[in-house]
Structure formats: C-alpha cells, structure tokens
Image 1 (cartoon, rainbow, N blue to C red):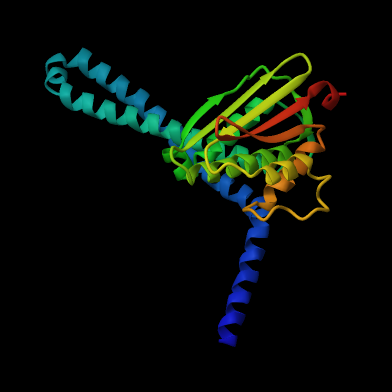
Image 2 (image 1 turned 90 degrees about the horizontal axis):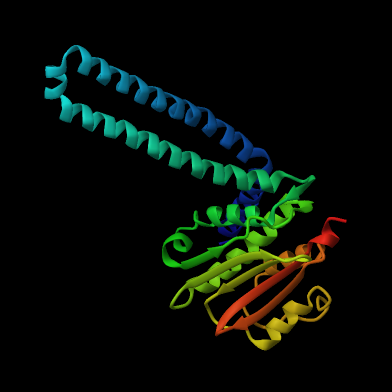
Length: 265
C-alpha cells in the first residue's frame, strides 16, 4: 500500500513537471512542427488543382471525344481535389485557433487588444471542448468596433477563458443548455455580457463574488466554486473593470464593464 502511494505521488510529481513545461516550452515546438507539413499540404493541394484543371482543358482541346468519354471520371477527380483543398483550409483555421490561443498565453508584453476579437478567438477555442460545441445552444453577438484596450494578452485570455469555462460547466449540467455572449460599447465603456443556464447561484455567493477581492478575507460560501473564477475576477479588476454576477430570467449572468478611457490613459 505504501509503495502504491509512493508511486502515485511520484507519478503526480512527474505529471506536474511535464505540464509546467507544456505551454512555454513544448507547445511552440509542437505548433512549429505541425505548421511545416500543413503549409506543404496546402501548397501542394492547390498546385495539384491547377495542374489537374490545365490537364483537363488540354485534353478537351486536343482530344474532345476522349475527354467526353472520361468526363465523369475527371469530374470525380476534380471534386476529390476540391474536397481536399476545402478540408485543408478548414484544418488551417483550426490550427490558427490553437496556435492563436497558445500565442496569447505566452505573450507577456502589453499590447493593443480588441476585446471582441479576443473573445471571438476564445469562443473558437472553446469549440475544442466537444460537449460545448455539440450540446450547448450558443448565441454570440460581438461588436467588432469596440475600442482597443492596452493590456497583457495572456492575462485577459486566461481570465475570460476561465469565465467562459465556468459558464460552460454550469450550462452542461442543465436542461435546456444555453450560453449567450455579447459585447457592445458606448462613448465611455465597453460592455461584456455572459448569460448561461444552470443552477442559479445563491444570493450569498453572488454577494461574495461581487465584493471580491475586498471580501477575500471572508470565508467563501459553502457552494461549488472554482478558485479560477476568483483569480479571473482579480485580474479583470486590475484593469478597472466592474465585474458583476447576477441572475436574469432564471439564468446566471456575468456583466463586465470596462471604462476604456481609463485603460487607455
């Protein structure tokens, strides 16, 4: 029994060492090694399509009867090549979603950030959670003209990922499963609004979250609460953001108000 416990502890230590190097050391190399063959596949598949079209056109000009006899076969080959190109482009978009997320996590310098674009990338990345992609009804309304903020992309990426994942987890435990995300802005503020289904948070939990981190010395309510949510709230409030938890039509809601004139000063 003691040996088994020791093996478990040793395994956990090795796993922690591995994961600690994953984002900053392993993932850049993994993405780089994927990018090279992907670029080759994209280039070759487009070149194959051009060569095939040229060959078909030459066949039709030089040997029209033979070309007509082979028309069905040529059409099937051309459709297969078109399908390969289409799927290659889809794979490239997925690759960009993954690489964009990990780039954001390793970007520690301050940058000009369009929050709606960042959230659009977070939502594309969230689709890698298959239950979120296939089992939750999602409604996304993003105002791409929101003013840029100055901040650390890695901080904001992780903070909003945590809130999205928190909302996702709640929605997955409910029927029906719903998730709503909206951004908009006025002359002074950028507003992010997240609404999601699931068990309504008790009033004491809402009060604790709305007062955090000032309420940090108090004991958190005895409900299921991910520490990551508290970390996310702390990060967002360092950007002078007002983070409010509430309920709206029996749904949980998170509203985030960002005074962009302050953040840009």
